[in-house]
Image (cartoon, rainbow, N blue to C red; front, side):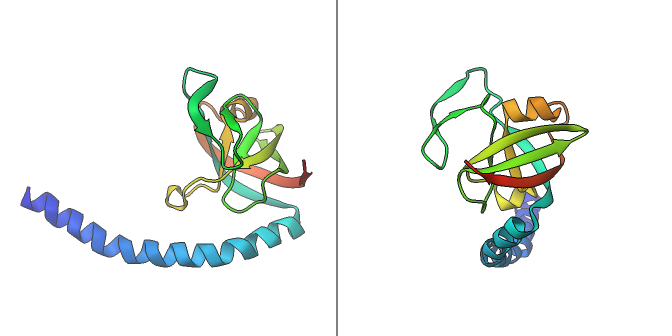
Length: 141
């Protein structure tokens, strides 16, 4: 037990300052990055999917823009892109157009885009769970 407490203490002491600094730095740079994305019209993102439950609508599950979450809609979550931004995602030769309607994923996941189960199915991401996708900003809905 003492060994576990020691390891947890070391992890807490070594990661907390880095996470705190990263959060501050990412918040400042995320606004700048969002403007760069709009100007460049394209980037790659480490993407995952969410909405793996058995029901089409999860009870009381709303997206950041207030919509009821539907895992089969072609939607996505991004930390900084404006709500309603439409993206063309390409993965393994397949493409789908999604609309940003939620915020996420958390910085600590190492991913920058979460897509709905419907979008992940069309892209072929379901089996792997995550993948590098090509992202093109195509406008606002």
